[in-house]
Length: 95
Image (cartoon, rainbow, N blue to C red; front, side, top):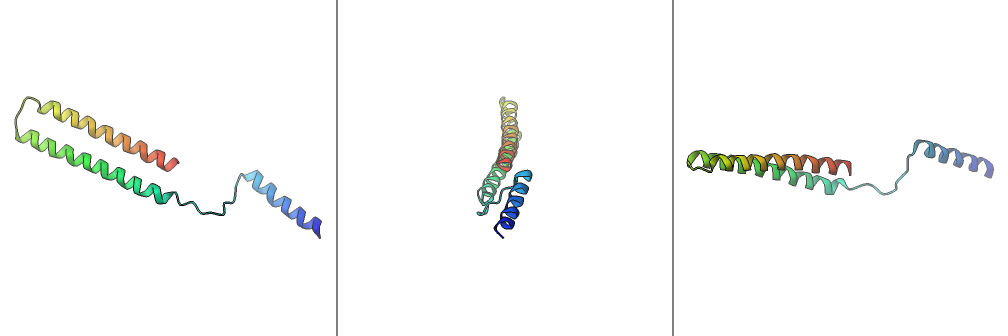
C-alpha cells in the first residue's frame, strides 16, 4: 500500500516539475497596491492636461513675447508626463 501512495505522489510531483507550476497557499494581493498607484498616475495625467489647457487659454488671452515658449515648454511637459505614466503602468503590470 505504501508503494502505491509513493508512486502516486511521484507522478504528481513529476507533472508539476514538467509544467513548471507551483502551488502557492497564500493569495496574491499585489493588485491592492497596484490599483491605487495606477489611479494616481491617471490623475497626474489629467492634471497635466488641465494645466496645459489653462496655460493655453491664459497665453491666448494675454499677448506677450514669451507665449510661444511657454506653450512649447508645457507641451513638452505634457508629453513627458504621458510617456512616463505609460511606462510606469507598464512596469506595474509586469511586476
